[in-house]
Image 1 (cartoon, rainbow, N blue to C red):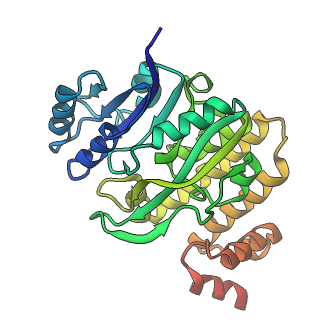
Image 2: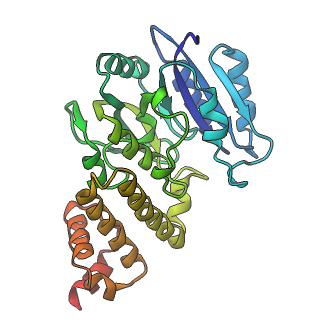
Image 3: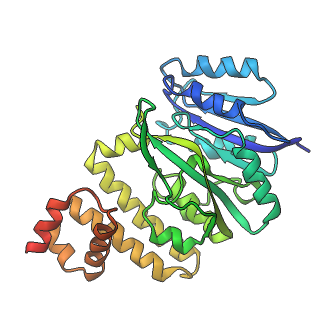
Length: 312
């Protein structure tokens, strides 16, 4: 039986500029239990692997390395399922990618303490700061709430995919995810379908303490690639729509009312990006979803195009 209580999963690819800060966030954790950090580097072409090896040599009881010589993502291999989840030991799993980092040394302890006392909690999260690529503050975070609160799967479905909490704040029970559930797949998107999956298993608990930083538009990040290519953004929204249909089927249509609204929301975004205003005007559900996004100030940043829709 493992003497680790928590396994931390860290994904790295060409994060030489950031990875040292990420690894320091792990080393600085103060816990009453042992934890291990599985670092998977997907054949970085910069100096990321040298820095990762440096930390593993200094803290051999903490770091468990998977340093690829060939890029697995480009080969279409799910390296989390194939290389990371099989190395999980202990009761809980936490995550942080190599361009983000933890800022609070009590993060792991606080989350474990909560989950130990609340067996119905399937995912424990916390607040996260948004920072610029160079590490400077943007004065923004993921959640405005200063009170602890619980979220249901309907809350997550009805909100924007990046709402409420960031991937770097996730902690879940290892027994609930040994491999990803294919019914919750969304074409390369990782954290959003995971939120939805855990929401169907129990409730998601939010701790209002800011304990990590999300680096926006980091070099080589998924978000920077999406933002720079409209076709990829459209494909991403279509993947979310397809994923929702799969989830609806898998859950026996238990969440259909919320899922229908979410599909309308994502469809509206696609129609605007494709300039398909005729189809948008003919879909009351999509039009209502778009107007709600505008009211919430969470719509795609194309207000001039929306004005064109309204004037027709």
